[in-house]
Image (cartoon, rainbow, N blue to C red; front, side, top):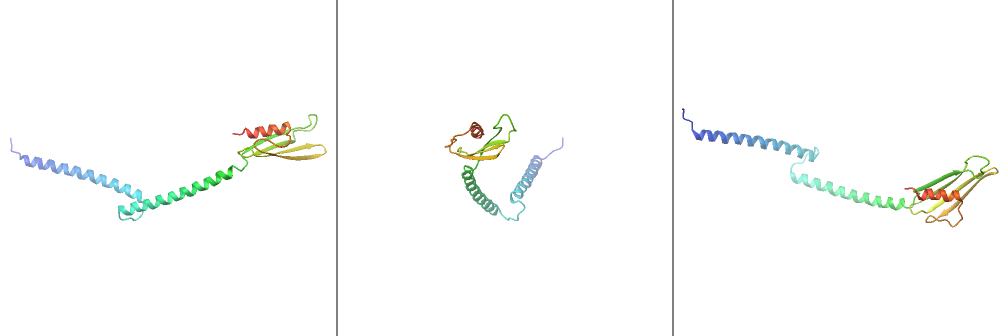
Length: 158
């Protein structure tokens, strides 16, 4: 049996191990560069400190934008409390024996059930229009059955 130097075998093993480690680190380096390129979005930034400062600037701008948007949303919420959000409508015939359902009632309410009811009565002699204010779902004026139904429809809008 020929003589094989054990130091040569050990040295060959070490070299192979170093080659494997070198390949592993090269692959890791390429993955890291790909992530950095993605982070930089194609910008020419020379070091990691510039990357971090750039990200901090973006974060501060986003925080300012979020604060601005939050303020605008609050203003819109305040405005929306005063807009008509609930609508109830009913068409009817005030005279059962003639004509069609040409008369109508519309109830327009905000979120607090404040608003008004508009009634239009179509009769042979012409058209009559009435408006009655509504506060917290109630009117200071007597409501007809049709006006009550339109008001009820509006208040039960989800």
